[in-house]
Image 1 (cartoon, rainbow, N blue to C red):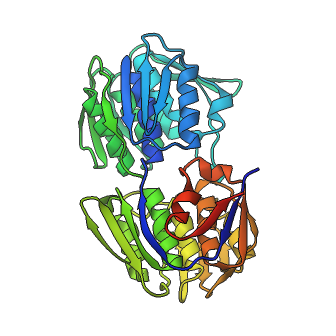
Image 2 (image 1 turned 90 degrees about the vertical axis):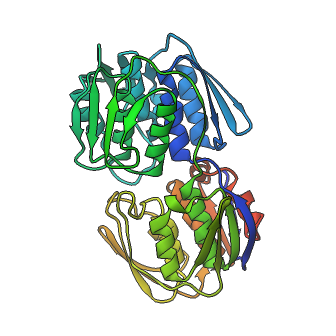
Length: 415
């Protein structure tokens, strides 16, 4: 079992290149199923979740090859439309193959998904939306069996701007007969990246970046070469590390327009930043000030940012109220921070974090991707050694987290 060994670190200085967005790359890989032939994705991070998605595509008869940061996906005419439990239970994002399989092949068998353990994330909205396009579903032995002779465009209103449901519906609608309108669609940058990718393949989509997507179905799509957007969650992790350590970091590839609310919060806390055509530079010259944090769907503050902000609040001046409005169970890592000497009082969807000058190194456990990365950040602000077990969770979303942090002066190693 690999672990992170983290020691309290002084100012961070240098530059880090931000990799491709995990939450976009996985969906683009699924979308490649919509077109026969060879699709090339560039700037794809070398992380566990991408490796799992590669296995999933291969299980369907697709040929997948990685060459550095590029993945070549060769989709045959005949696909086995089955996503087995052995793969799906390792990564919840696997459910997004449902839309493209139903759209192109007319049938799909997908195991009910697994993934990070931080509360219920039902897929009802995915299925209800696809049913409005004409799909029919049955359940047997833990699998979702979907069938659709021909999807037909419809107006679908999402009760909540679900990212996954928006993605599945978008991929299903591009080959449907007629016009589909998705109201209250999610607006995350990764959704826009998927829509731009589909458009390059020949899809007709209006309203990209808005909460109303209009898709005019086409008869066929073609394979393309495409570059994945940079990972805003990875960038947020390094900004939080800078926040607790001080110093100056240049994040190559980071896009401020994807992180406006986060950067606004960090500015309130005392971080300075500037941008140019290659990325952004951030600096912290003194101890940060506490602020209140509330998660909301994009363009609000992403729930994925929250663990990093909580880690930063643990050593900021004053007290901050943190409210989780997306996933009710996403506070499990707080117990680990308390083990490190953090002063946090949590109840339901709320937590009050009162900053201390320094945390204390302790053995802790990563419960999911972002919680694990947040514990690494917290360890940088702790006296002594912090050992974080279950490092494999972090590997699902980060390519060489320890190496990138070490390159700018942080004391982080794998053991």
